[in-house]
Length: 204
Image (cartoon, rainbow, N blue to C red; front, top):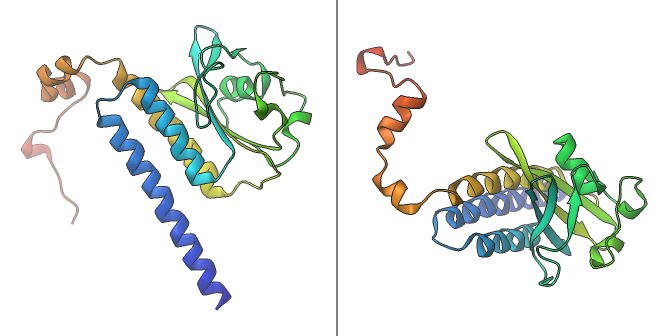
């Protein structure tokens, strides 16, 4: 009986994980402002992880700038800045690695305090790089007020969200009219080989 309930819980969590990927993908194809889309992504991450805060930073030259939060920090958006490599967030960007700390994140020697943010006193910290075309362009953080052991599903989810946000940023640079007018077959042919029909082989 216990194993059955555990399996049900795992399946439910996987369905929730798939759901967040689907919802982020739908945000990517809608005509929303980038700021609104990033705020929506931060709130989706908060819903999935039941965290107390999700913060999203993006690079402005060599500084990481707070650009979206799941909780209202209107005065801090665009104002909180980290130098590359500074703090836990900067470390994640520099090392291009996921970072998970289950308790007392503020005691980590890499931690940097911002008096403007209540998250400075939160216990648990999970962070993943935002990657666009194989380059780190930002960082997404998940924080809990109380100690929290991050699950493998949470780590995998945040890593994937970092990749999806990277794709979203690339798409945001495209003019919608350019997308409509583009010859996508020519684009594929320019950047890679398209096999002719007589070159296609099928598995036996």
